Length: 499
Image 1 (spheres, helix red, strand yellow):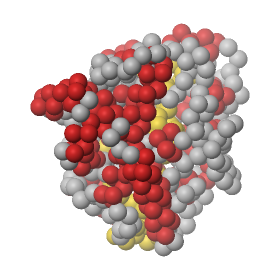
Image 2 (cartoon, helix red, strand yellow):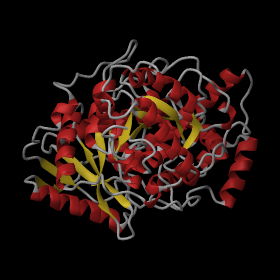
Image 3 (cartoon, helix red, strand yellow):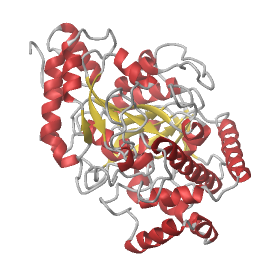
């Protein structure tokens, strides 16, 4: 392999440079990645649909002239359509669903030279902050395999954190890039609404809450990947202002003295684990040492109202997904087609009126305007990425009593009764109490990132979460590069890394 060192010593940009210099071939990199997946993945269940032969074939062909030419890659098994390869969305009914097209993001990854070797584990329809679908079983955290890697990009985070590939694709509709990045010690950025394309069949996934991007070990990989994918595609509902210059170039630019507000308080009034709060306090101290002005503050956004508005969309999207499944299957969908919780959420979605849904969307707009006012006084807003460390596998699954209740509700289609019972508010608090900080960026369309700057006393990574004004990914990249230099994390690796 020429002057090539050990595979895991490089980020994606580093591996691409080795290929360009002729120190290693794309085929050799693919074989190394495949060997790692075969050896380590059984401990993690991160890669659920291998694409080894597809990858090998691509590696033997002329490589696309892109920034990541020859680099092994993985795709989340949700929304990332790769022609001829199953896209299950974590759902048993779609186990044999094989798209005959590439999604726009997959097209751009191919043009960037990335070689896809498989699809990664995700909860059914990306619904949960954990990755434990009935179809594939639970994905595990490389730092402690008894714990979740988070969700919904849990398989992606687990694979990158374990060194199977240097970066991989994920999506974020309520924190699904940033939450698993925090749990797995990775850098995870959610771009602004509209920054990356969602075609050819989606316009505003989850009403514009979803954005796709990569989870990485280095900041420069994330920046270079966004350079390769950003920009609208044909039929996009809107076009965001393009960056002034490549994001990769921003990493060499000093962010200047920033005014940064922070909080450790949950926006929905629930508890925050001392370690998660401490991670932000330590990050605030580091930022002050770097010359930034940091002070404790609040945004003024009504967190509880926004959480309820988020869940209204959540329920409605599940109802729509089951309607789409009905069309795809050519028959009525039943509770046997999806997981019990998914069906229950869909039933709830059918109980809300169009007026209620529009009211929820207006709440999103109110929050966006409030964040706009906040950023008149502050450059960046800092919180914990998550309110608690990762849960144990199975800990957040419905209890036996809840499962029995859902079985009755689903069989009798008692969505209206469920809504009247007041359980929606309880469900909102339970589902978001561990991860209440990330949704505001999705619903307001703002860019946000989780940066791995802190490890707990028992050796678990804990992310610091930064939100910037709309369209200001460049600001986040400049700050992230500064933080990475001040407190590097790339050498921190879980035990499974060595296999």
